[in-house]
Length: 387
Image (cartoon, rainbow, N blue to C red):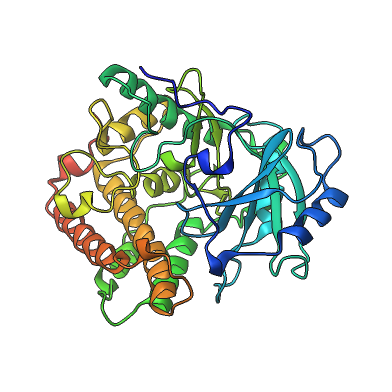
């Protein structure tokens, strides 16, 4: 294992931070105004950074939703999150909600970054924003960070530990967090199907499929609601920060924008919607965004079996087919929303120009799973996943 490039030296510049790039013109903001506001409004004791002067600012290029920036201050780095430009769906990009979740959940789940300040006044930089401490450590994105080499056994340990992080989140006692009001009670599955179907219809462009047969199947075959837990709703390797000294161990979980209270199996299915493994076809491999193809990584089926074993959850193969289709459909909706913004020239990020192809591939994959579920023999349909 080579850990030489996973730690952060104090004298590095923002250009040395993995994923940090010059700020795109369309995503620039008034740094001096932000710095002045932050110096006056940071929660006392929330950061070791010296909030003096104007920080160096870089932009992390990997996100497709809220924008994320590195603020380099003397004494420590901070992270700023804000919405992108353009029209937003109702309830999306709620900085206050994301800040509250991190602030309250962070008291009970040590992987949540500590918050520093929330600005809900758009006049400061043009949008609301919040600032949090930066967790130091490598983040697995499309591939492992440069200089980090793991053998098969270490990769397997990393995979287990990351899935166990999701298990830990789902095990948090909702009552003690003060976040129970994020949930809307029974009907979570139905609301998710209806909501994501509506979003797709609004975002659909002429050059992608309708997804109508998939949406009808999801609506007609919904499983009953399971006991609710806190759910992250965007759980991926590139939202996990690893320990610089022991990089198979997570130390942080980022991006709480979509977190809520709901069905934990839907959270798992949403995570597996991004899970492209080694035996997936070359077209799907082109859209891989995390290193789930590496030797030692679990397959999707193995992830489900591991999760069910750790949590004592039971789910049939037929029911899991529903969850799997929903997870893939949800990823397709997110990709299509971003692709629509790209076509409308609300973003010039060139990584988005092929998202329409991903949407088409995901619809085909959903239909294949639906056909296979319809052919399941009764004994297969009722078998427990992973048995």
